[in-house]
Length: 461
Image 1 (tube, rainbow, N blue to C red):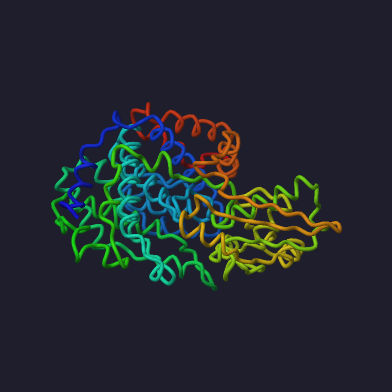
Image 2 (tube, one colour):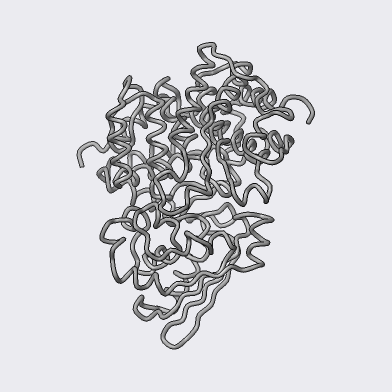
């Protein structure tokens, strides 16, 4: 390691300007905001969403920033956390590699920006630096195979909201380094491996706590509180808490030149864990092309890498939403029956529907050695899936590499916008939804974030 990685990141964040951003990064950031706000509206309609809203009402605080869906204003730290957690309720939000990074960063940008009265371009720039910083720290501390098989901590996600808030506060590079040190020192550790166990819980990702800790760190540094200014560096650095090795070069490689937010972000077409999307797409393609009816299907064999073919992904009888998003059999069944991804998948009636449960029991999962090899080497980029369906006395098989909604196979414009409209229209009228859509599309031209935040409530439906 040459020099301080923490210092280099702080210098990048301090010096980054909106004018330096390539068009692709700006446009993709607006897409992230659009997708995340849509997912938060969808999450707002669920039982988990109602719990989050009730919690926000209990805590309250200064009226600084808007809760999506509800429209009430609370402290920016509470608003960011609740909105980010709402966006993840349906497991429909953005993906980066094998994690969700964007929700905590985007919602921090919007909420802290509302507290400060920021321009749209400043918020976009702050979201970009948060995304670029946190994903590079993640690449640097990524667990090796031995540790990752048991423990995949995502506490590095605290650095995105921390840096985003620090940028909006216009902190000096010295105080940005302090922010990184404070954030790392209080980062909550969410073990992703445990998040998918049964009985499952509502915390798949800790977006609320990453927002809370990250924004706290930035505001403390702003007020003069100090942290360790080389938190990421050296043999006793942050990596020792979360990994069994560190690649410091990865933490700064391509900063300000190669934008992860522009070329690595995934947007989901289905409200399930991303790992099953390849097989889900294949299943729907076979059903459509062969004009199969659900009751005509005798067997479905889903083959992919071991992670998604192991418990709890093989559970055909989920009890709650957070079980269902990790159930391959149930997700395939509800998709075959034609329900629209999002809240419609997770109603009480849907989870108890005997037709869906019967079809789910016909699904078998089996790992593929070549899929394991591909996933270990390249992750989701080359995710391999194969599906075989037996129906009407015939056998149909399809195989593919890669995922719909990835940078290599992006969603079509009508699919992406259709997803947003479907989620938002459950809470607001069509006119308000279209105003929200157009505001985000032109967010870089917005002089004050209130142009956006005043549209985030449900209004009169």
